[in-house]
Length: 312
Image 1: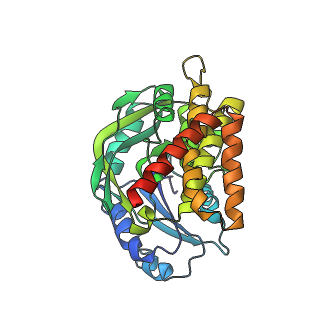
Image 2: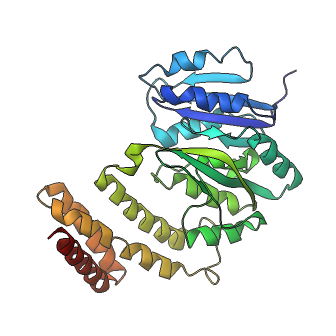
């Protein structure tokens, strides 16, 4: 009789053939053996299938290929549908694990039944190389980590850095209404039902590509809008069960609205394209709605003047 593995390692992939060997091998090199490795190919057009096929002789490795591309969030949720392990550990297809990652994460999950999420420091590699040391360590209340990250950035981590319990998927899967915040939204829902443990070691390796650092300007600007609506949604719906007496959500919303001034600065030189007028209007409307329009525009004018002087 087959028994479920302790951990489901999930690799969602799309056209990442050149990185899959490293990712898969980092799982097979784990010191902790009780896992299943599930690879879900989101209808790749490169030679991903050929790369993955080399590893299918290992009975822990399973491969699925979607008949159509269901999007990044859809593929993450498809991975969850196949998982059978007690603990869920994603690995993005261009990232890697430290050989002892599963061993150390599982030890924490086993020791602390109230912990819903484990993360760790991480090594950034590729186009940039450094270690991201997290601001908190060891056992923390879920709400403490939620408040701390919402006042800062999503330092909790990318999917490669985080482990959570399959039993806690009662909070739901990854939500398609978010683009770059979909993982943070999931972590905050996990932290609403349990605590967090932060291992102060770099146990995951997150790859940064050159095109991530020189990405499409307008696409990056849309992240400011998503940030604003994310925080606005926290106030309106409070899916994360936060205590607003301890958490100044209104100030954070105004801060996120004011960040939209960066959209104005970037989009003004591109107003010859009609679609950019819509982006500008969206930024201006957010600034007006949160009553931060005039001070934000003053900042924008100052920054534009400084830029003009530097280019003169």
